[in-house]
Length: 191
Image 1: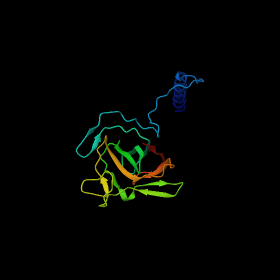
Image 2: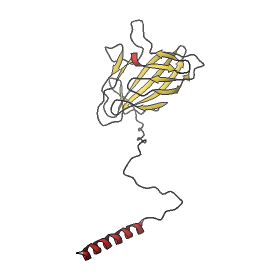
Image 3: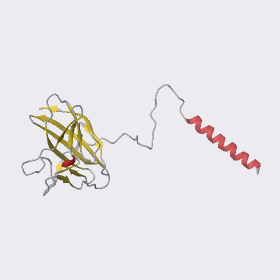
Image 4: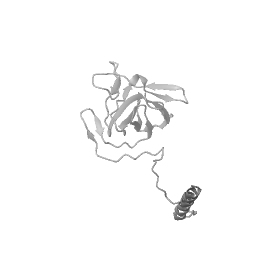
């Protein structure tokens, strides 16, 4: 019985030695290695495509080139700030919500929870409203205070909203959108 264990152990050692002999020797140059795990912080880049806009305003498969990006609290949804422009007395923000997940998701934006914050001056700027109290922003049909919709995998939607413009000497602010971590220190583009 001991002989069988000894032979099995010897065979395992020989196999291990043979495997090690086939490994490349370490060198000063880095050699790429294959990995079955994707890096945690790396996401596949969106592929450019021609937007096919549906009746709901959803751009199927549109790629967003943005100023800043955040993952959201909605499964599979990322938010990309694509425009942040001051023109005259208003600042327009455009945020593309894109579903990069494998299932439909329903983001909802209540504009009374959206604001800009000038941290240096301690000033908060809320989304502008018209004379009837409707927010000057991308709205869900029949609503004057919010947007929501189901985004299927691969679909995007461009939210836009208007704010009072911070003074000209303010060059960056923080944008807070519900369900999304703050977009801090966004540079204001002057038109």
